[in-house]
Image 1 (cartoon, one colour):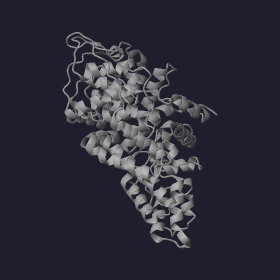
Image 2 (spheres, helix red, strand yellow):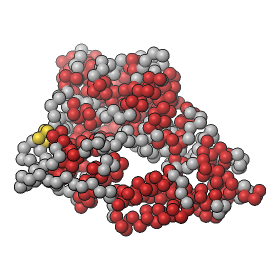
Image 3 (cartoon, one colour):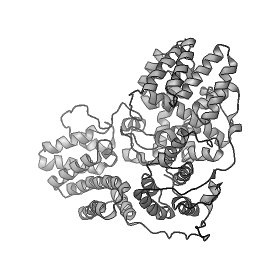
Length: 565
């Protein structure tokens, strides 16, 4: 995760002005608020800059994170664990409690390895078990190291006699890793009895987990889509009319209207079709369907992007006690350039629907500059739901489409003959540029790689290194390259396979109609998550090319998204 810039007076101004409830009385450019080293108080005086100090709970947070990665004695580990336990009573800082819990159990694994070196079998087994259980199935393998396996193996072969309880734990550990993983080779050499094919990670999934429970609007839309794909134009027209009446606030209404416009154009009713296309552009200007609508009309969306700065009127904002406490801590954290800690504190701002538009903008700017892009997107989504009228501005593009790790992406993408902006858009969608994020199915890092996939791509990989952005990008790009090659450079198929698995894409292609265009095939993807995933990444890439000033390539020109070898 990228840290703060060396100069952060704008953050101080943001806190002083926005969070203390001071109003200038007239709209001012957001960028000026963030760049001002001090702001007027109600009496017209400048507020003082807060003096940075290392907040005690975050000092402990940093020490614990370092201890997980470096060598330590049993005594030093236990001392740190006691501090983590006492922190609940001492700090009353809820956002950081779950972080402390994770570090506590990660240290428990390290303690188990130390006990194993001391040949204290009982203590080692207990620590290993507590660490595995406390971290959970998908998280503990990324804290497991080869030396832990070596210590466990020695316990199992103690005195030439095999310990069955130890072998059972060894099987549990080895089952959680791919067979080729370096971390567990020594455990497989024990030749424990064959176990059931249990995998903590879930080898089949390559990205996020699915949840295909359909809402009422999704069920209704499926009937429209089915009619559209079958060419039943009258049914589409009638279905969209009923849909927009019954589900006026559904996010699917723009997709439904786009399909209606497509049908009307095919029926020769270009005037009404154009009116619908323009309505989509006006209402959701940065969306996938806005881009497609602009292509149908021959409109260059770049001309719709305004360069004028955001003008905000920062009125007093009522905050809860927890929010106020987080802000007090954040005032010092931002001065220290501690982006990870800032992310923890910003999680406390969960009452998003209660905040004013301008307050959300200020939070967006703060989160973006601090490298907390998932939070930036969360705040932006609320503005989108409110039909915020200022989305089509260059300043908003910078907040919604950051280009973190672009240098590393370019190196690997060029090597793999892939479009760097497509990879950038994929990472934005997969992880929101969070290098350490672990999904509910065990996918890790920027490109959300499953361990089994990562080991297939790079056989000598140590799984914990997937937290390293350069390693994650290198492995992820190589895997994505194999998918692009498999589908002859068609990113729609490759992206769908990255999310749902190649076997599903093969099945969907066989079930498709030969006359379908690639865009129609995307509409027909049966998994909502995968369809949204593909369209979102294609949207991301479009706006990245606008930001970078490169020639705009239409979404309909999909095969142009790769470069020849």
